[in-house]
Length: 113
Length: 112
Image (cartoon, rainbow over all chains, first blue to last red; front, side, top):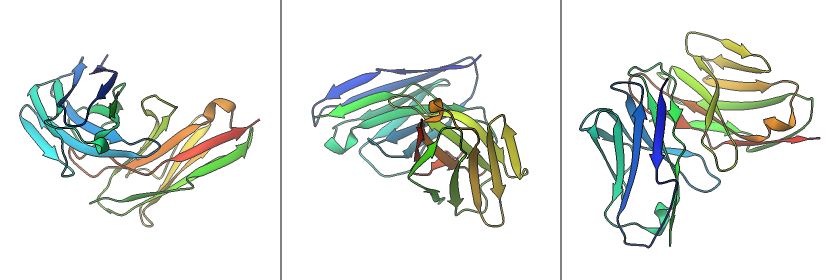
């Protein structure tokens, strides 16, 4: 069966510091991968998605970037965090194709102070 | 791009009664409509989904209906129980690898 991991689970960072969040998927090949952000008490906003190694699509302009160095690894980064980057970051995956169910990882809770 | 509206933002029902949450979407090309349940501090969990070639789907106490002409879909929970209390999100996705566009969520409260 497939499993999705995210780390760290919780992170407190000062404004202006860099960020690296990691997501890995086990038990499947060539998944579509996604990064979402959920602000406190709010809905989920799609940030990036990837259909393959090195292929990244950005949904909203922001202070963040994403990379996919390996088939089942998806990384979310920032060079300088802003207060507004605080939130719950969720990685998700689907099998390739437009009809497949999307499953979420456990999430990383980021607080920028 | 896609826009999903969800109502109500908060819904309080008596235990045993039914709950209905409604969503509308803007992109007629969207073809997949999942519903997620999120408990406090946890990841969203898929509870039911429907594809555009189906008008209704049921799984025990949960059902979803889709009206493609009107571009709206609804979640129905019957015989509500305390463990149904959570935030529920609807979402829509177009074809291909597009990510999901979510509604803003409904906080469902089951009163004992």
